Amino acid sequence: MKPIQSIESPQNPRIKSALRLRKKKERENNKQTLVEGFREIQRAAQNGWLFDELYFCPELFIDPKSQALVDQLHQTNLPLFQCSPAAFKKISYRDTPDGLLARSPLVGKPLEKLSLPPAPLLLIAENLEKPGNLGTLLRTADATGVDAVIVCGNKTDINNPNVIRASIGTLFFIPVVEASTKEVLEWLNANKIRSIAALPDAATLYTDLDLKDGGIAIVVGAEDTGLEPIWKQQATHHVSIPMLGKNDSLNVATAAAILLYEALRQRNK
Image (cartoon, rainbow, N blue to C red):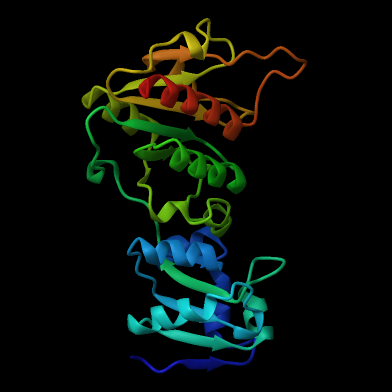
């Protein structure tokens, strides 16, 4: 096993290097991101995810199993750095850090490497800017048995540390793909997967559409801008969710949950 190294100063070069990964450009250049938190790191490790480095601070541990997780990762020959509280808090992006943070390769795979079962259930999210929304979508996708999540549009960064946090590590055990909207539409057509686009003005209610047969992809966009016009032109079906109050749209994560659970209800009948 590699010896554990100590970091005392918040000005340590490794601390400064990790801090730079908060910026998307730095993540893309280094092909790395940050994963913070006991649950997130544990879930990734349980699913065979290989980290690049682990930073930990026993004085900040919250979960009693944290030291066991550190020992487990040490056995894999992962480089470990024990930090002082001041050094760890410098790289933490949480208000209440729990003493565990890892440098990780970027998450996500290309469309052509996506392996799916027959008649898959997919979730497609376009142009989501808020990390919390995307993280919640990933958790909902896991809860409803979605086979893969496809993220498209240039506003979304699945490797934002706050997406990983909001998903509670779901990115590490459900396939996540990044692609352009054009690529996604072509891929759906080639694989004979129906696209179900959520549009506020669609004439068909989501409960009136048959979601049982074949592969389907639920498609949602940001609540402020909605889906790109091409989905209205090329999606297989358009559906709406009834809005009986004064607001004209739901939070995207809420809308996706409604549609996915309806698909699950129909497909489990």
